Amino acid sequence: MSRPLIGITAYLEAARWGDWVREAVLAPAAYVEAVEKAGGAAVVVPPLHPSTADDYVSGLSGLVLADGVELDPTLYGGEPDGRVEPAQPHRDRFELALARAAVRAGLPLLAIARGMHVLNVAQGGTLIPRLPDAVGHDRHTRPGVPHTVQVSVSSDLGKAVGERVEVVAPHRQAVKRLGAGLLAVAWADDQIVEGVELAGQGFGVGVQWHPERGDDNRLFEALVEAARP
Image (cartoon, rainbow, N blue to C red; front, side, top):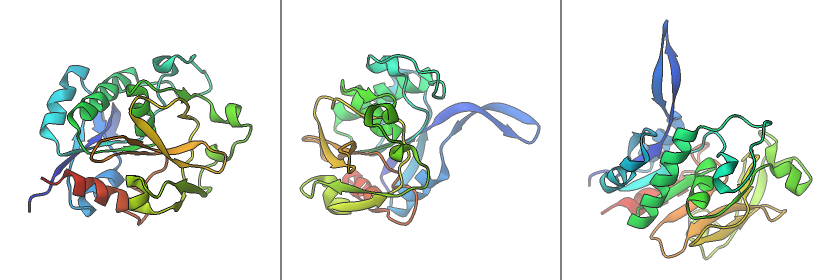
């Protein structure tokens, strides 16, 4: 059986090889390894012109919207914040178009961390731009500190990972208003949304944490299974 082609979104920025510095398309190897381990064939998707989004979607069997720099707050009605890393407008524009094209086509989709935010904003939702300011604590932003996420057992996410999952997911932004067609299916103990699903889509899941890290590959396995002909 042939491996389904799974696209993975990527950075486009300067990288160094020896004395050379050139623009490069970059994606963490953990995403590629997780897709291959699940039985898929990974394809790194560069953030090019938004007009190419439908072409990519038509050639892929599934898509991973990967993590990266936080979304520009002005894309969902927010204000710029000098305390965060500068946005990458070219990547924001392309991935929003790619997410919309994937949803229109019913392409199996796994949106991770920033990718979940992209999916939500693409569907008309909004984000909490600075989470510690909104919830009054910094537990969500602490690197390396695990926490428990409660998952709806009737959701595709729950069927893949169970009712409760221990995750490490430092993040400064979070879902605020859900986008059209999205359902909240996982929550932290303070009710911050940590997982979403597209209603009526064969497999359209977004999570705040990083399933490509560690040994639990069940979400990638579910994506690849949904992407098989």
